[in-house]
Image (cartoon, rainbow, N blue to C red; front, side, top):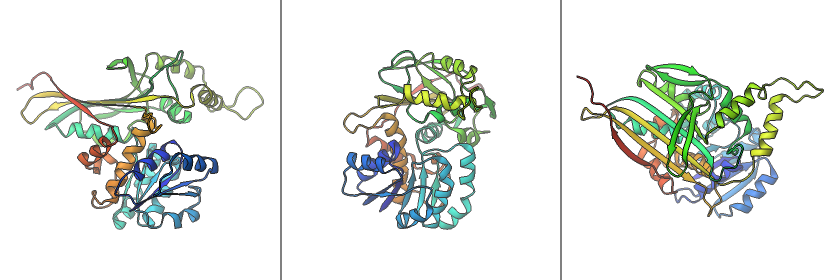
Length: 387
């Protein structure tokens, strides 16, 4: 089978790496508009089953002959391109997977449902870390209960050697980080969707090997999960994990207005947000060794009538052998696993759905375990169910 990856940046490179090491994939095609990025990719991944093309994701005419014959197209470019790219993939008879989209983009992709059903192909957005892996892990936990009532997710990426004063490095774009810290966050309370302020709800969380961390509400993690579980769960919240003090530092920056999109009080087109983005890239960007932490705590009634808590936990670290960061591994490998499940026809039918709705859990987590991404679990007893 042939799989095409759009984008040869950090995530696209990691997706291509995973795919070219899977026996069921005969050819991996990688498209990238930036010549320098493409040269760096070729120098890093010299595999006989990889083909590269200098092609821009915005150029549908150039992409069409490259994508033709692909079993799956995996988008690792900006989410604004994904509705158009998903439509193109369907027209050419391919499944489509992407790493994550904001709600407005996801809504546009949903409009392709009828075409996807007619073509009997799947469009599965949000297959990265969060949304993506964390969603699937949450649903896997909830299915272990006869009557689930609550789920709490704690997801974070951290430098393994934090340095003062920030104890944080940029694992993805500065723009996305600012969006996550400035947009409302959907949660479930008493089974109903509510929106809470970002950087609120700070709590202490202990993780072995990392000590005391802090968790707080942030947007951009799992926006579709609250809507999918509304009426099914009483409680759902998703919080971001960071080293202590992170939320307070960001509240200070935001209270100064440094994320505002209005121009500076001098003769320039730059906004306060533009300056903040540039400084974040300069001070917190660059290569570093990292870890990704995901913890899902699900509560409910089990088949034997007992109230229990199931804790699923995943900890992944920078891989020195491949040079892949934990963020690359935990974002790209889940997307590659979904692509392979689609290409090998292990997901029947067609349509538009998030991964937790259609991906078979066991093959998905087996594929991740083969790459060293494993999940631990433990059960805890709660108060008995009242008669």
